[in-house]
Length: 175
Image (cartoon, rainbow, N blue to C red; front, side):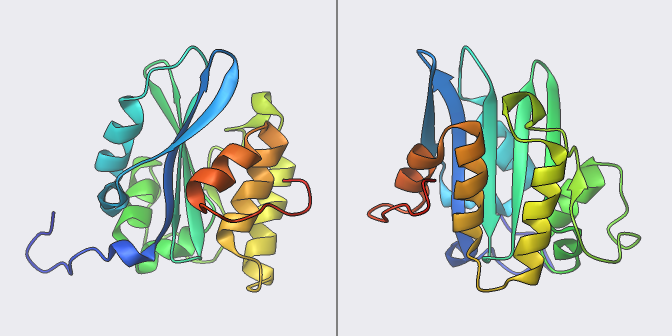
């Protein structure tokens, strides 16, 4: 869906677009259509379609640069973006900052934004989440998908995430 003056969305920039949920007490990860990465409302609507007895998460990785995490808690949405400066170039990152009540233009600098406690009750505290985001900025050799697989491992769904986000890829380091 493009508007006048906007370039069309390049699905090749999507590293992963998944929804994560619990089914019979076990984590499951399923891919989302890549086009949902073009717009935060599309992404949110796609994640909302998933029913679960437990947490429902959406994870979106773009350009091997940053990721967006969405968590649905009742009627509320918790949002986190690993790199706020992505809003300078990417529409969906800009939409995340706007939804968080932050002005994209006023969000100069780098680093995460949003609810850093988004995964705290699932075993991933805000300190570790911030540290991982800093590593992504500092170590460009670190692949975004590998970093998110590590974070998923702290919560308990690394294998499922890796199988979905990188089919045929063998996990390393116990993720």
